[in-house]
Length: 94
Image (tube, rainbow, N blue to C red):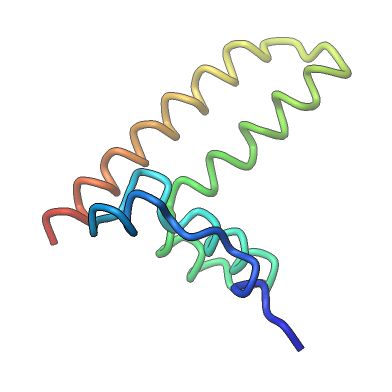
């Protein structure tokens, strides 16, 4: 029986240059979420918990006009970018 890891795309940046990109760990974090391993998902890619609501709000706002959607999207987007950058810097330095 195959596992979700068998279908994951290899990071081209890591393959060519030998270090993680800003998105490295995202696929594995989603896989951990589907397996119910929420702490492992957070450790793998902390921004997963801001990116999921961000995409849900963007998708829901496409079909239903949500009051204050732009404000919510902006806050989630800024939080996601900040978490991604902080996590990336920590990965490179530790």
